[in-house]
Length: 422
Length: 174
Image 1 (cartoon, chains in turn yellow, purple):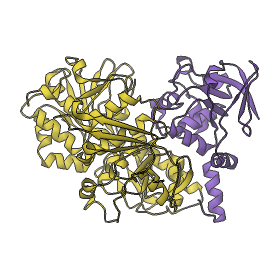
Image 2 (cartoon, one colour):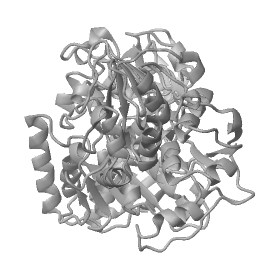
Image 3 (cartoon, one colour):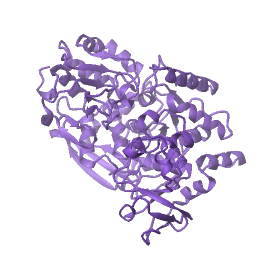
Image 4 (cartoon, chains in turn brown, purple):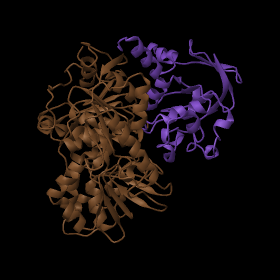
């Protein structure tokens, strides 16, 4: 019996030839990521295991993303303690304010995720790493502390579910629309609990790394263990210059066994929106045309990448954000910010009347940079829309793609970018 | 054998409602986290120590307990600090199932348990056999027994103790 790519990765990193779903294994981890507000606890717990040196100083990746730049004294003090503990452990890869980004973006963009390996992180969207052909998994601080000490983590080998994506992407339709479409189709609240979601097919083979990251990122909200795209030419091109570690083209066997297989033809897939409150309450953009909102937000580990900024700049060039809308844009990393700046996208977007803030998780975690207040209606390209997610419990969050946010921000109401005059 | 009163959820119980947003950046500490545990689940629990003061030993829930994709361990330490000794549900969200395992708090999968209990019922749980008795109603349920690895972690008093011991003895983790 053949194995799926996730099973192969679990097998090769646990020193086995073969694994089966349900099996519990301890595997090697390629990297372990932690960030500002949980990181100190990870290091404290790590030392309580009787260790003083981490398993590999190059493989423990530390990122400041949730709390930077500190909006209040509490966070400033937490950041100081965090910096102190990272310094104390002589960590090689520390992405602090100035070199920061959202941890998941940093992990992939800086080459800390390698095809065929396992990387873990203390934040739920660590599933993003699957875009680079790795098993990316979210874990708690206990697992992080153990991995820092031993270079290992325990896993129950998941059953795999295949999403075979065919057809041609319509103009302005993005990976986010497919993510939300799958969310609506499968129901986010645990229908795919514990499963490994594998995205394959012609429409995935043509998808950029940024798109693959969006797709894998949101698999956590389907209850899945991980989302993965097998490495190919696009992965190879992306990783060139980002990592000097050796890796190989790993993929699922033809006779691998899947728990379920779904075929989705995206030729008819249009821009998709999740209504406030639940991720699986999705509708095509047509149903919401004309809906008013007062805040627009694009950023996060889901949609804060260069191609997202490029799409927005193309739509918004020479136009003005509607007077009833405040638009805030937050690049996912300093690298993205600089690239968007050099490409002229930032200039275009600022000229159009958008505010651009320094890379961080921003209002997505509801703790700073453009949080929502009472009565706000937010059109967001983030990843979660539950009550209170961006701040006030009396705010509503619609989730969609950057191209919908861009076109809608000009009009001041929800707009289909396909019919927008670019 | 564990014995005590249960609280039965009447809807999905999400991790971000067990520990609400303003406490995500708190220290991970059973005493501290238990003060506001379940604050977002029900209005009656949105007061300091409100859930804890009820003195429940068990939680009974339906599908995807502690879902919504938060990896924070405050969820588990909060429940622990409030005196919860086991959670019975028809299924669990994987992130918090993992955290519960690491803390040795039994997250026990049991079909139909949500339909067979009411808040305040006296239950008795046998971790070895997996049998959950509802003493108030005189009924009993067979849960899915813990996997050997999960039981081993639980016996060691959690993953930290398990690994600490292995490191101290110089034993491999495999």
